[in-house]
Length: 355
Ligand SMILES: *Cc1c(COP(=O)(O)O)cnc(C)c1O
Image (cartoon, rainbow, N blue to C red):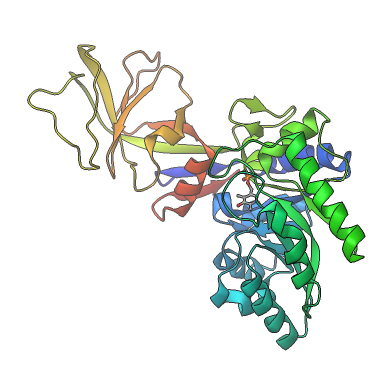
């Protein structure tokens, strides 16, 4: 018996997506770091990623790493959110490598690593335009010069992030800029930088087109593994887009007007809803709500269903046009978006089922 709402996760499909993306990348000399933040680091999914050949995982929160260690999962770990100054000891203890942009944090990481008798790898993030983390290109050289003498840490390479906050898209020219910066540091400072970390899922598009600069040898991929695409419009060949399916139960099914009577003000979420006058429609209420996932992150599998609205614990859908004669107690299935999966796996009210 399923306990609703239920997130069904097809581990075989996740494994398959990992293997396909890894094959695509390996052919171009690129290592894939499997990013686990998008699904709350559920150990079964992490296992599926490792089974398909990933050796290096990336987490954005240290809290996600401890349970994996407890589950006996062995992989190299990268912290992909730049560390808090107050967590450097745990960063060194739990991970092999972190993305960084603040010299004070790297100095603290150095002290922590010396104390723990470890070498912690640093990827220095460069902001090429996304305006999230990273130092500006003109500061890379001076920052690298400060990092190199620090004991206990090792400057492994440069990295960049695209489209996380500004929608700044990956491009060959931006990645070439990163490569040139990397080469300049190697030459002028007499060191070897092993890694050029060229972004995330969105950079896979350049791998498919075979335009990614050959020096880029690492991508940090989460979304592409879960949903088999390089962006929401472009599926990757031979991958599954439906490894994750959310099922919710119908708790009310009635014919009702499509427009409310009376004066419309703000709803419980502070929004003023808009309605289309379509007369009386067959509406179902599902026992799932914004506390689990916002409705714009759900895509009904039954294409004839329309999502109308949601409150914290109710999702209202229009089933009038469906060819299926739904009943109270039936389940309705959705494919969640990437933010949808994040939200659903964070909700303690959604049960998990692995197939
Ligand atoms: C989230 C994130 C990634 C992975 O992004 P996806 O779109 O899930 O592939 C990579 N690097 C950093 C720094 C991130 O924050």
